[in-house]
Image 1: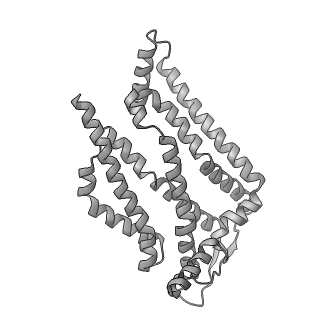
Image 2: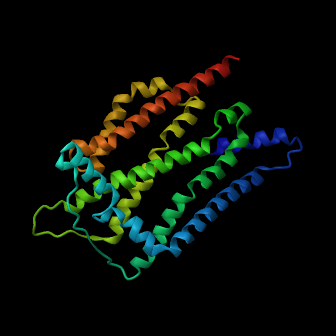
Image 3: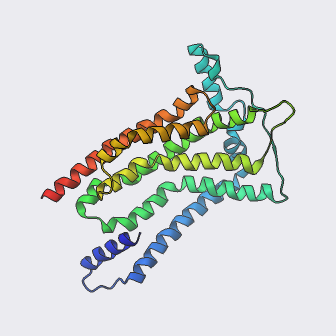
Length: 283
């Protein structure tokens, strides 16, 4: 971040020989980018909070309902290919609240998370506005559409987590029993924590191509390095898929395949970014 600030300040100093903008002024500008981003999250959160009962029942508790879209589609797919194991087990989820203010505070937490997701494109745009002056004209052109692609990848990750990973994870753990003596009564905060971690975590993981692009542009990452570490990456992906899904190969592959494709796409992105970087250096 300090390098970005320095490059940004140098760039503005060239555009403004009088040096009217000091380092403190530049930090103040970053602060306003952050404030505007927080305001966007707040606005999104307020909208969610106004409709919190509908939002909580339809979205947050969606994967806990037997008629959830993913469950119905998987059962239809199982009927088409004559594989009954694809259709998920009947859900037996029971929730409890163990704190006096638990449900009230949960309303704020859910509103903030969904507000953050909805406001992500604006947040990324605000930080891009701060970084953009530090880039050269060619770098700006090569990064054209970065806000769109970063937002698209994030939302794809969120949807993938919500409609694929979360239903399999919730269904498996909700129906797992060491003994019929034990009954699964899940705390509201534990369920929400699991869902939010999956959704936000995988949403950010899907930003891998964007991260790879910028690291490759500055020469910190090469396609050769990514290819040489591909076996380690595949192992990590499968371990991650096995941890967050039920222990059967179909669901593991269901989660791992998009991540493998994402890694391969990132190698291609790194190759193109490094090729352009080398061409500029030769001129």
